[in-house]
Length: 201
Image (tube, rainbow, N blue to C red; front, side, top):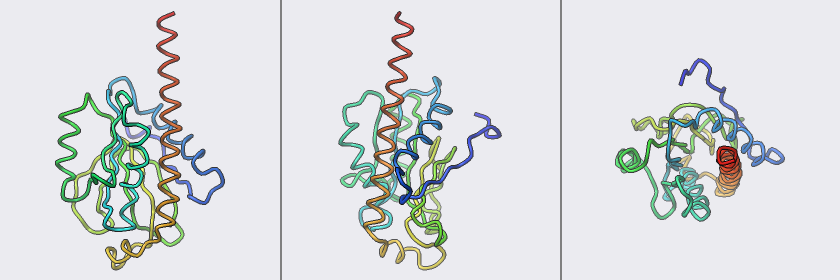
């Protein structure tokens, strides 16, 4: 895919009225643009750890999604509260995804730190993210598209900041993102069914 024509990143604040709806519309546009026929399985990779409030955004989203997507064909969730994907097992998880699934299209999700005015913003963008960048960890880039949520202020004592992030904010962001993903996937499944019905008829 030519990155010169890629969709620009789009940010939505968790406190925006109908935030999940706005998020769903943007994600749907991204999936329509990039989740093309060259890909097979859709993998939602939720990165983070349940041992840190701020860094639990990914596992919380994975926990919420897994309940609804567990038996869906060609859609897989990695990174939950019970089985988080974090710095120590990220590379193993990536290797498993690429060796197990059929030409996977990966939505990578992670928490991040940022400016004070950006706290609460969720960004959808084209291309991979670099997990752990906010805490100066050198981890593998991953994702065809990415979703990041700014959970707290960056720039100093990052580990302490993540540990002292408000759970309320993280839960609200997890609700917004997981609801938006479910709506967007429902839209995708409807589109596929319509296309299949058109071909059959």
